[in-house]
Length: 291
Ligand code: C5P
Image (cartoon, rainbow, N blue to C red):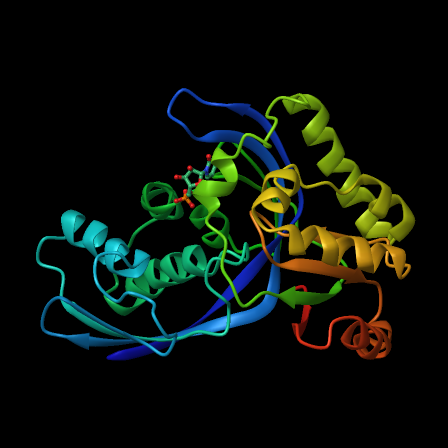
């Protein structure tokens, strides 16, 4: 095998609670990750040595600042005689959007290299590398469409979603820095205990399985919304507008700025897409599903 093409899907955080700030600057959180059908494509081709990354996303660095190049560096540290790879990254997932695009790229690059070069890395070894690259990377290394995550968001407990959920995403032109959102004084860690937050996720999974959307709407939270709203007031305006228009299942994903609306049926999305388009004529809308 000389070449390999892999899909690299995005995630949503259906629920996100920040339980405390850690001495190392990171935050402990409890979140429900959900894998969605919006995806990038990564093509790997063996070359004698090193990594050559090309990408169709304007402005995305392709040197060591890119998480995929850093992932190759970790592999090289472990396998000093590792062969090289030419990577073609075709982006559909916006960067800095709260959709885990870069983390997914790093995870699927590691999985792809493991196959291409028959490295024999176990999931445990891959997850250990993933954690070094970023808090959202480990989720993508599990074969599950949904998972409870704790710690920095990197301790994963798969909770496969039984229903194929549909979402409409409101994508922003401008990215938002995760670091800035977590650093904001508007973030109030510790408003909820670890036990309560994990209980919320358990209930959420229960109601999702039963497709009880009213109950889900009453439950879902994202503690990163207040800090993200203070940095980007337009996110809060979008959510308010959608709520006033009668959409109860609306939240921001991760550290934003992407806003999602959750739907029960595919037909519903089709109908509502036109209505949402009228509310936000200039916003990029994307229809996605549980993946
Ligand atoms: O791990 P990642 O590089 O994605 O995180 C980006 C930044 O977000 C971190 O440097 C940290 O400031 C913040 N963060 C945090 N707590 C988390 C995850 C991220 O404070 N659980």
